[in-house]
Amino acid sequence: HRLKELVGLPIGMNVEPVDENLDLASTRVSIEPGRKASAATFKKANELGLDFILLTGNPGTGVTNDLIAKNVALAKKHFDGIIIAGKMHSSGVDEPVVSLKSAEQFIEAGADIVLVPAVGTVWGITDQQVKEVVDFAHSKGKLVMSAIGTSQESAQPEVIQTIGIRNKILGV
Image (tube, rainbow, N blue to C red):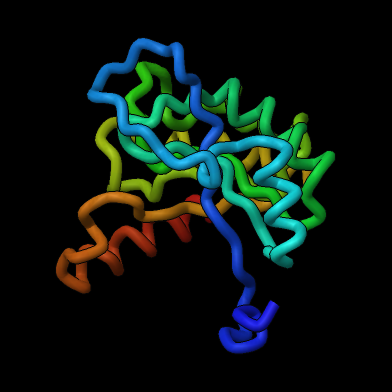
């Protein structure tokens, strides 16, 4: 666990519960087994001393919210750290990126933190959608994390400040 010692901050990894048989709305991107959600991956994360796992989906990987929820439950059995669950974008799947239903599924399965895309980073994600998730998660004693997983990372500082303020107002 030398890396944790050197960095002095929590260390985690993205893990993707991929549905290999799903027809995607985009070109499929294959990922290595160590990036896929599985009991073996969760056990290895424990061995490495990781602090958190983020169950999410990158573009074109074919990750559904249902599979994220199922793998939160699996991670709870094999991983001792914090479990974060949600999407920053569609991952090539034709379903809502953010919904109250998916947040409920993640929390019921045992997620500690729900991930949502920061308002202003993904088309169609509204303040109301994020606020619903935030209010529900907080009512269950859980946290919500918003993230920029798109091209705004290289935007002008004012854009990033606006995104930050909008999400702070929503309780993220």
